[in-house]
Image (cartoon, rainbow, N blue to C red; front, side):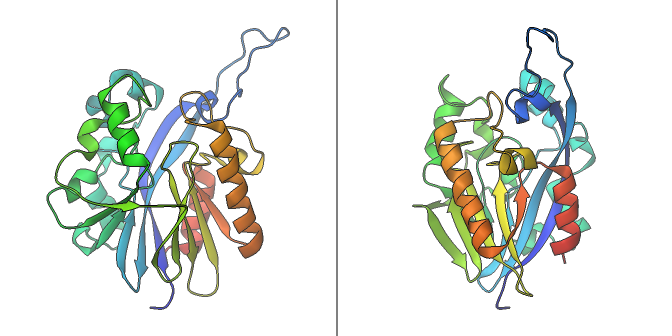
Length: 267
């Protein structure tokens, strides 16, 4: 296999106020002091990436017990309403894989909706790739009042075979390049993939929750942005790669785009 093969894995849905995802979406004004709020439906996904160097899992999604495991204010804001109906194991089986098929895991970042089933790999020798800026920030956030509230310590503590990704670019296999995209979090990872057949896929991940973040430059909403300056720089980097490669772009939680690209790329 000279080029990666990608299979996108549907990991369920989250409902949340659009104001979290697009800054100013329901902004009040003098003429509309009490604007209506819109609840959006967002996808949670993972991906299996087969390469010459092994089979990689991209993120793990929400845990089945999110409703009781996540802190109540977080679940109230980001309702993973069908998490109990699925698991990483069952969702992998739906697309023809088993957890035992996974040779390594790439964590785009360690927020609770991405690291929710990382525990499937605790106590194993499975390499877990994470950017060197993400792991300390996750620990800081989960154990102090600093940082972000979207990290749960139990998601990433334990016997893991961490592999720290350094710098802006890290090649995991031919045609599979990790990209450091700080902004949403300090250590957010995306990827540039050269797919069989000459197509290119650019994983923006949570750099852009939805298409409006990426194409229109609408920033993420409150609580979802570690650094807007870094976010803007990461977005420009992705857009330059897109211009050079004519890649399709996969966002972190855009349901319509996910369904379209799942049909296009998944084996």
